[in-house]
Image (cartoon, rainbow, N blue to C red; front, side):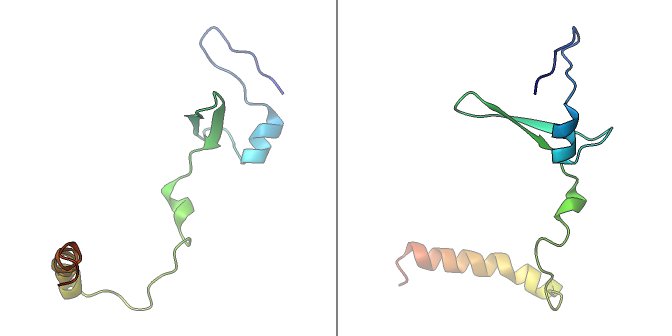
Length: 85
């Protein structure tokens, strides 16, 4: 498949490619330059597309636990850097 570039630097994405990527009018795409010289075109997904990818916690985390976590992480990092002594 191919597409011509207009004087404004625009190209039409062929319908089979739009269908394959699930693109519709108004969607955004991202271009990725690959080390081998190729270019990858992927749909830019909204943050809502991530919903459900990570299982929900069974019970909420308390504010107290949220405040303790950074301090506990710092203590365990210090212990690791000292070789567990």
